[in-house]
Image (tube, rainbow, N blue to C red; front, side):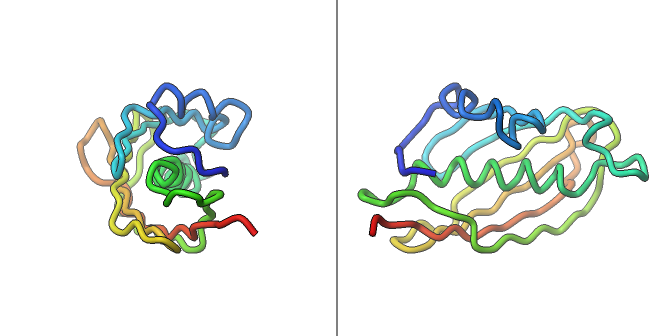
Length: 141
């Protein structure tokens, strides 16, 4: 993903069709440097065989939220970034409704960025997952 600076929510949403976040149905709601909000409507295709929201659906929302927000904080001259580590703690689940994510920057350095995201069930207001990732900043060779 190339370093392209700040993007509005509309510009970020335009990047999603034809990608995994687009297939999941992720929608970016707001974006400002250091913070991004997004949501995902729960539907049958996103559930695990046990009838609950698949953990990969939750991680997809959180990782996409952090990744898209990383773009705005890349240092000048960086060529992009890649996720080098991610962790999620799943605290709840959903079978229907909408889940939302709030991604916030914890560290924006020259070689790495660290992001946290909280994924919440909009129906209950309860957290579904806590997520943290580390992004490696890429530089032209």
